[in-house]
Length: 128
Image (cartoon, rainbow, N blue to C red; front, top):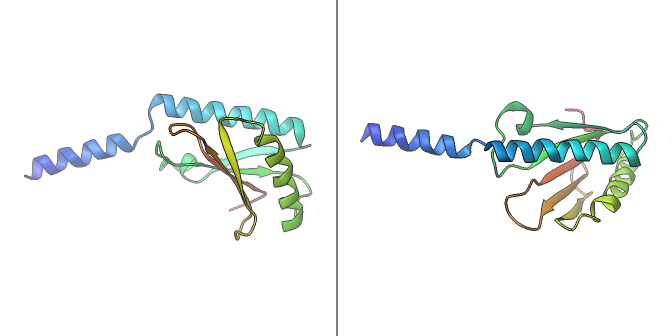
């Protein structure tokens, strides 16, 4: 019984690891986000954080991203930048954008319309 339980735990742990496909999809997503935001926001830097960086990211986890924007130091300024980003992200027909400006840290939640694609929470100058 112990051996079977150990095998089941190992199998579950293996299933929680992102596949090479998921990792490549996440890396491609981050690169495209970096390129696109640098074109529309002066000085923008995309920095992933949380589980995608600390190794606890799973295939069903979203990607937490902080966009560093010079001068966006107030909550209102951060929300304005998020609105600017939202206006660009809604052009993607594969995802939908949900503004969560009432959260303690204002974010955009960018989620795929079909399962298996990267979802993302975007904040501005959220230094943890």
